[in-house]
Length: 264
Image 1 (cartoon, rainbow, N blue to C red):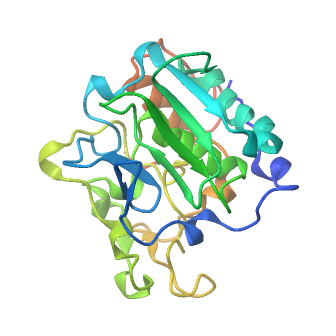
Image 2: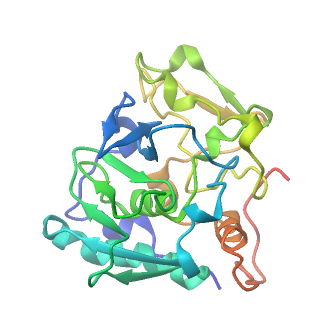
């Protein structure tokens, strides 16, 4: 049975801003890596990703075990971070283990924005996962951990135009690159496009006016597109895709329940 804790249980004492409105509007270099689409770090160079996940096994965490360290500045949020980790652990074969003296690990720290390296770095060593202002709710932490596991944004898939309408005229100036698609010639698909994915931004992400203008909407009218904060959980296919990427033993998310809408 899928296990998760809803977002609203952890909002008390955290930042209230939606990270989809506060993450970076540029592609700077952070810790020697390129910051892409606001919150994803890649080694500077070609983007070796699948349509929605890292491409090479070297970018996966060995045996699905992710070693991590939480900085003292996030001590008050350690419970929610661990609950987000347990959501992956309870539904996939991914395991998170606190660092002792390992060289390769995820350094979860307080930065000036929300971002994470996508998958395991080729170069090894510590790799950052920043939880700055607007990043400490449950859904956002699940999202950034999803990048660490190895997943890209759902709206960046090379086939996304079959499922999403992008309203470029509503995107605030300087944020257009957040809607770039992945390269077709270096991609393969893991699972169907998923409107419920924690890796898909909401309809008003990077909007000129988040009260009025949508930047994305489903091709099929009437389907909801919630923000990462509003979702606050992994979807059925988020779980399926993680298990497929890491070749986990068979699992049955949502047994006996109704699966969320996906476009197969």
